[in-house]
Structures are given as C-alpha cells and as structure tokens.
Length: 166
Ligand code: CUA
Image (cartoon, rainbow, N blue to C red; front, side, top):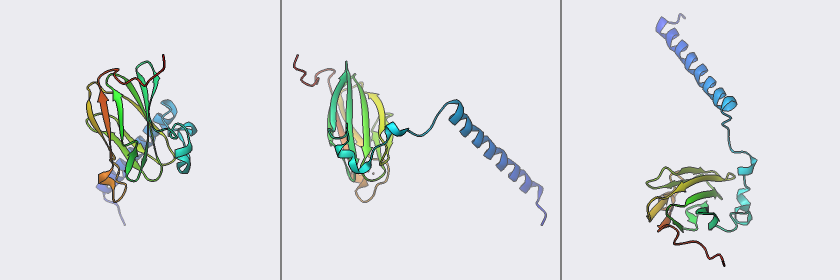
C-alpha cells in the first residue's frame, strides 16, 4: 500500500511534535530540575493521624506573622472543617489525604493543590482581606464529592495570635 503525501506530512508533523515534547521534558528535568516531590514530602497514608504535623491538625504560629495550617482530607471532609487565620500573614498550607485523590482549592484565590494519598502538599498564601473563604475539593472523589468543603475565617490582621505566655 502506498502512503499519500499528506499522510507522510502528518506522520512527519507527529514525529516533530513528539521530539519537541520529549525535548521540553528533558529540558525541564535536567536544566530546571523539575521533578516529583522527594521522600521528604511522602507519608504513609495509613499513619497520617499519628504522623507529625498531622497528629495536630489546625493552625500554629511558626514565625513573625507566619502561620502553618495543617489539614487532613478524607472522604468527604477536611479536618479541621474550619480554621481561623489573620489577614496579611503568610499562611503555609500543609495538607495530605488519608484515602483518595482529593483537591484543595481556596475559592477566589490562586491556591490550588492536588492531594494524593502518600504525598504531602504544601503551598503558601497571604489573605489580603478579612472574610470567609471556602475550601473546595475539586477532584472528583466519589459519592460525597459535592459535599466536601472547608471554611477559612480570615480575621483582622494580628487579632488572633495564639496565647504565648509572654
Ligand atoms: Cu474530595 Cu472531591
């Protein structure tokens, strides 16, 4: 069977695209060093609730105007379901899943993570305005997916430092 010239052209284009994609992948991997999270970001999904920092989910102060929010996702809720953080502070979200693939998107912000069992997802965000924000699970995770959300109460700047005893 004889290939038509346009078939050859498409075949050629496909090979060029394939080589370009492999080149881009190689460039990202070896020049920019982009790769999957290392062992430091891994966790045994069966041991989440007893592995720090997930043994104490919630908000902790970690520095001057800096907080860490530790949350656990499992079908079909976030623990804790509601957190309070001050506006203007840098919040480090440290989140993982105990069971399925979940999503972690704070509505109206750029904060958007995938929660993979066995991986710790981390990202930082600073809320400029006090108010109420909704955390949405935006990865389909089964029957209760549409009911899976959490709440972030962003308070006035610095009204909520945890009691520090000094
Ligand atoms: Cu969890 Cu969708």
